[in-house]
Length: 299
Ligand code: 5RP
Image 1 (cartoon, rainbow, N blue to C red):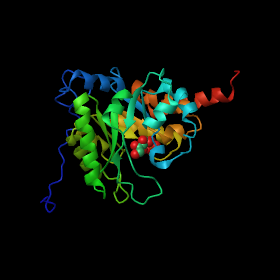
Image 2: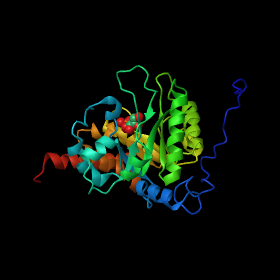
Image 3: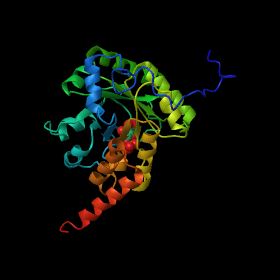
């Protein structure tokens, strides 16, 4: 039985002490894996900055046609030069991404829910490892519900995908889902991200929260942060800047890019923060300059 009564609160995160077992590779937690795994991780994460801008457009897998993603075939080629990784479903990738576009791929491999349901926490592994290999996936993304009704089946899904990924050296990204009854507290994210990491994933995707630097410190693999609901551009850039400062190795941003009135400029602004060490203010200035240029194309 878990000793819930009198549970000691974790506190020694040593947030300013670098990860100790990183020698030999630029990403934490990957040092002991083989060449194939490292190659996929180096496709996703830029070895110079150590970071990644993933563009998430997998929303259709449970939301259907989503505002901003109506025409993936038009949007994706425009954004490709400014992001490091495309995160999507096999249906979207095969139909809308010309294979000539050289981009790393985070392939969404679980599905089974839709937004008209009350509980989204029951999914299946829908894409088998052979299809992930055929699609040259650099990682497989698995929705993982900790503390929700579907926890057991989503951990079963996660472990099935990790086991298959270990056979063929394809990383797994555990996507930390927030169930409808879960509060977005650091306590929840410390629990969920650490459980997901200890299952054996190579990347964790999660959300920003209070004490996020402690969530990062306690997670032994790189963390990328979802953007979440659409914010104003200044707030979205502040979010990106804040999480990079606190140790995230990148973002996996969807709505805050594709629902921006200027998605290309927004992707570039986010990339400045993630790869070039720009502040949110500098990135916002760039974004505003770009939209000014768009408005006056002949000047
Ligand atoms: C859904 C996902 C989405 O890809 C994720 O939420 C990222 O998109 P956004 O920045 O719009 O939140 O993983 O589970």
